[in-house]
Image 1 (cartoon, rainbow, N blue to C red):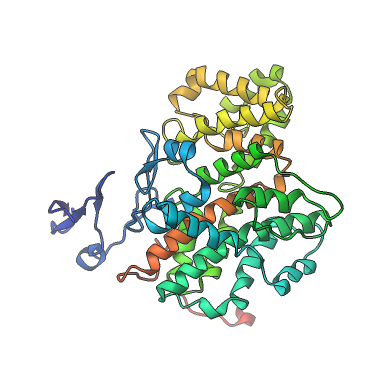
Image 2 (image 1 turned 180 degrees about the vertical axis):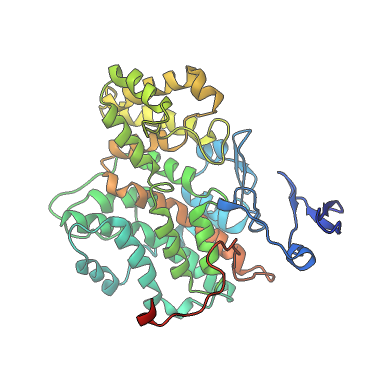
Length: 431
């Protein structure tokens, strides 16, 4: 904690207060307003928490103006180029990169615990054939607490570790089961001889009647996408996990709440919205008309996949994922994919247009991720599920950090009340 103070003067009473200013290792300082209500009888008002630091964390750092994303201090471009999703998961959970022995043990723990209880698997048969995969994933994750209650003491470090390994190992199996259920195909069990992403793709696309061989590039592309989506500081779903977890709820309930929050189209559904937008545009020739509609405030037409609530510069994940998009489409014979051509042309026009430049509407990670998922054969209904698989590592890391904090308090935001003042009840016959 720094020795700096923020002087607050009440204009009405003239009363002064010195609010402590806290400094992190990097990033802007924060003003500690914990005593504001006690000293002045007021709360702060910050809709959407745009200027509020809700917690202290050592996991992920974002500099939106400079386009910087760090996991435990490591730049996202270095991790994307040199690491793997399981190594990144270890990093997020434990704070440091593992040595060879630690990584091998972690990978073993994950790859040997991918099966889910048969009774839990049979629960999928209770969902309608057209149930949304996110509804199934959210429900099954919450139900895990009924099957693994032997290790749910949130204050036991070993139980927290078991939970972390268990949910990261099993979330791909749950996702694949939801996909197979939607197709009406038999569930495919996980294989211990496959890597994390190869196993996921095998469970998605294998069928009992013939062998299925995973394309190494497909597994590589998926691994990259999982790395890029593994964590993103105090976003809506992560904050939801923390808020739910602050009540002392079991960890599966907390993660399920994160899945539900991610389901929102303003959060996890952005890459699906990008593909919808591209298909609505149709062809390159229609881009000028579309751009004109975007600029017209009365048209309600939005440019999806550009800009970010946090990044006021280029999303550092966008260039990485754009390069992979080209590799995937070239390998899979879709180099002439009309959606990619359309996306590239739209990007070129938007980045050279003063309207978008002045508003810093740069491409974000969602702009190309949906095209990659489509090239891999993953349907749009599963896009947010794929996001959830990746973000589970971040959710669990934040949950663990919060639960292990001796100063943890239950989350309890306040409000500005604008409803009726006190009034007396009127009997129904007199209304």
